[in-house]
Length: 439
Image 1 (cartoon, rainbow, N blue to C red):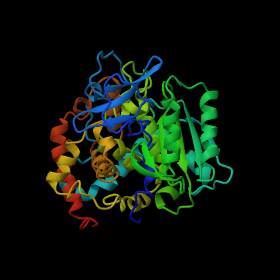
Image 2: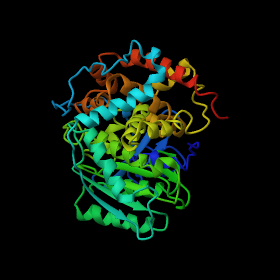
Image 3: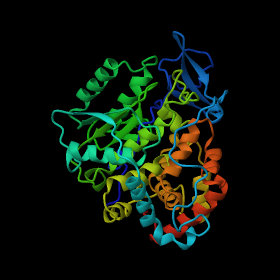
Image 4: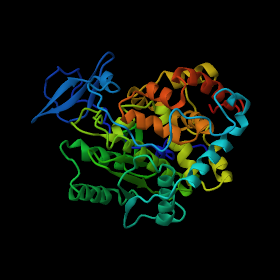
C-alpha cells in the first residue's frame, strides 16, 4: 500500500467537535472580558483561555482541563458491557510472553476480532444516507458495501452502548456547500440540541475540513477542493450519531475497501459509551450538557488509543479476509511519513505512549497523527492478548467516571505504567523488522 500523505489519509480523522484554535486578539485577554466566538481558545506559554457563553454574554475564562478526568461528583453508573472484568488472555499470547510472539500478533489480532463477530448476535443500527447530486462513491460497492460494514461493526460491539441512529452524508467538493445545508436542515428538523451555536457549527466546520488541510483535529485551513476526509461524532445531548464522508475519485486502498467506514463508525461507538452516563459533561467548555464525542477523547483517552482502536479493529471489520487485512497493515508502521516525535527505539516509544494526555495531545498535529500508526500497532497488540472488547470496556469504565489509568487497570488487571513498558518493547521489536523510517 502506498504511503499515506496528510491529505490522502485525512479520512481517518474523526471529528471531535472541538473548538477551532484561534483568538479574538493578538494579546492575551483579560478574564471576564468580552469575546466574539464561543469555543475558541487563546494560548499563551503558561495559560490557555477559552471563550465561554455565560447567559447572554460571551466572556474569556481560564481553561482548566484538570477537572476533565475528575468530575466534581461521580454518580453511580454501571456501563453495559458483554464481558467480565478483569479480562483474561483469549489465546496463547499474554503480557508475559508476547515478546516471544511478535510475528503472530497481526494474525492473532485479526482472528480474535473475527471470533467475536462469529459469537455475537447480529445488530442493526438504523441509518440514513444522503449522497450529493454529482458525487460518486470511491468505496467499491457504494451504499450497499457501506451498510455491510456498518452491520459488521455493530455486531462486533453488540452488548456495548451504540448510537440509536446513524446519519451519513456523502459529498465531493462541488456538493459540499449543498451537503452542509442539508446537514443543518436535518439537524434543526430533528430538534438536536442547539443551546450553543457550536453544537452545529462544529460538525459543519469538520465537514468542510474533509476537503481542506488539517492543522490538528477540529481545525482546518485552505480552500475546499479535494474531499478525501471523513469524520464521525455524536450529536450533542443525543443518542444519535453522524458520518461525513468526502469523496474525490481517489483509488486509495483504505477508501476503496471501506476501511474508512469501519474506522469512523467505531468512533461513534466509543463516544456512545457516555450517552447514558450521568457523568457525561462537556470538556470543551462551550455549553452545559453531554458531549459524548468530546468526553471520549478530550475528556478521557490519550490519542494513541483513540485513533489506534479504529485503525486496528475498524480495518479488521472492513477487510473480510486475513490477506486483505495484512495488505492494509503494510501501510501502518510509517503510514504518516517522517516524524521528529520518535526514533522508534524502546525508550522513545515508551515516552510516546506514556507522556501524552487528553486533551493536550489532540492539539498537537505531529503527535496526534502517530496515533494512526504507532497507536494502531499498540492497540493491535492488546487485541492479540485479550480481544477487542477489552479496549471498549476501558471506555465504558470511563463513562462510569474512572480515568484512563484506573480503567486500564480494572480491565486488564495490570497497571498502565507496567503495560506501557511491555508495549514499548513489543513496538520496538516490530519496528526493528520494518526497516528504517522515511526521511
